[in-house]
Length: 102
Image (cartoon, rainbow, N blue to C red; front, top):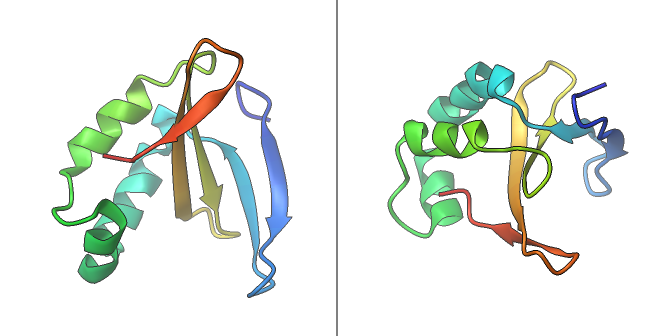
């Protein structure tokens, strides 16, 4: 289990692929860097709406996750590769908002 205890195996409906969704931690930065470096540049431009941020910007966001007001979840392939990331910040009203990765 992860520090926050949040992890779940999910099967993606369109592909049937199984991913593990769990908290993203600083220990996952090498896997996140591999995903970032190996991603198709066109996909990154589309994901970030233009210019792709430097990896260190994403790494800094991961390092600020506290599991109480700032969260990061990642989907991992069976091989341990990061295949998706979501960041969220609690707004203090009992709910959270998903924020852009950059």
